[in-house]
Picture 1 (cartoon, rainbow, N blue to C red):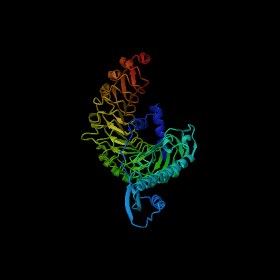
Picture 2 (cartoon, rainbow, N blue to C red):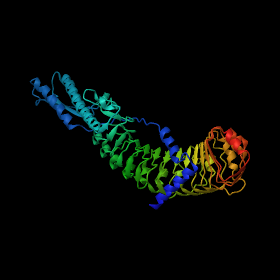
Picture 3 (cartoon, rainbow, N blue to C red):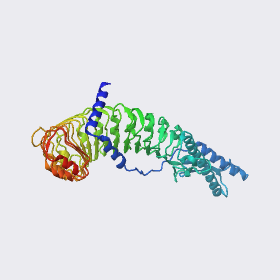
Picture 4 (cartoon, one colour):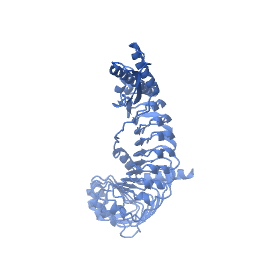
Length: 510
């Protein structure tokens, strides 16, 4: 109990002291979650279900009645003909006498079959949806007013029906409708459902385990609600899932091991919940996974080696947990990575000194507030040339800071609260390399050992810079007049520096 309290207090004091706008991995990660997740539009194959015995009996009864109405004796010279009704997704076996009008009789029998099966399956979906509606206690926008017996099911708000499967419901999309209530367990009866999107509402209680019956489900979006309880283990029954988005809820318990059986999964976002336990090693089964967010939970334990098997991974967000151990080298070799964020954990070890190609697509790299030691490797600025956000603060990094001249797209750089530099005269020389970063908005290097004369080149930083924090370093010299060119500068932090010159004039100019 002491460690979390101390860690939280330390964290809060650090942020209040150095970062008035609360720099964290979260804002950058949120941008990736919000802007970089493109919708999945899977090509859905036609899936045929087994024959429905009740529908078959009704169809046969209709054929028998037809033959009897003509005074024929269907028990004589019976001819058995099998037809598989692919559109109805019901196999129907027709049996009737050899009549002069047998084609006409077959057509009527087929129509009866179609009508009966359509009615039965359509009523199943309607009943499930009406029971779902009954679980909604507040609908301020009135979007469910069309859900009644006078309006065709396929014209209900948020409903999309299939054109291939007897008008069965394949999409239920009620996102951002300010709905309150719970998710009815009868949702599991929508057996043809492919997309379930109820995100950004006020739904509470648990995710019903019956959701595991939705074997055709491709996309599950329940994020930004107040759902509680555990993630159903039988979610593994949704074996065609491509996307799971459950972030920003109140889910608890562990990440179920069974989730590893969803081998088609491309996106898994369970962030901003109360999940505990460890990151399951079964996550390595996701050979198609491109996005993994488990940020802002209470997950602990070591990072599983299986993460290094996710060769298609582009976005990895594990920030704000209790993860420990080291980052295995295989994780740094995922060349497809665009965002790598393990900030606000208790991970230790050092960054690898050599990386081969070195994550060439990387745009965000954050290890802020961990226990990393060693120096900043040169592959970061030399190979990861697409970096926009580099957050290395609140660690125990040491040595000289390398040149960042190749990071022309860099926007945010935080190196604060480390042991960088040697209090010598050239510790600030790397600052001049940042003049190549034409979009730089945020630079925090305070509380290190970066000493020497304050270089005049800081006046040549991009006019986009808004926050510049260099304090609590052994800096001496004059504030250059050119700093007045930084017209968008909002924060200038140079505490404990030995400065001289017409400081007030420079500040008033800004």
